[in-house]
Image 1 (tube, one colour):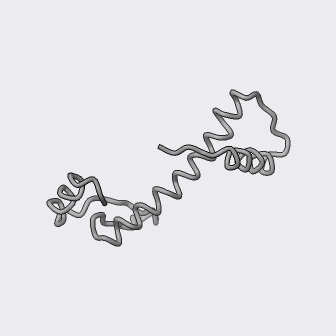
Image 2: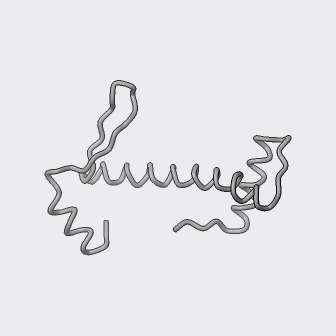
Length: 91
């Protein structure tokens, strides 16, 4: 789904080392821990952008809870339209 280029990987490694200047690890450790953390951060940004788009289009509703967190759910009034869009494979 998401693949980092070599330059993005290098930047991610340097970014991790900048935030954790005493860090050291093996290739396996760097791949499993350092870069996994970067992919999660990147995916979170992409997911947030996708959710914002879906909210703007009215397909997803957002509600702020008492603890100020946002909760997302499907807009029941647009189910048929959402189904048609998914069958066309374009959102």
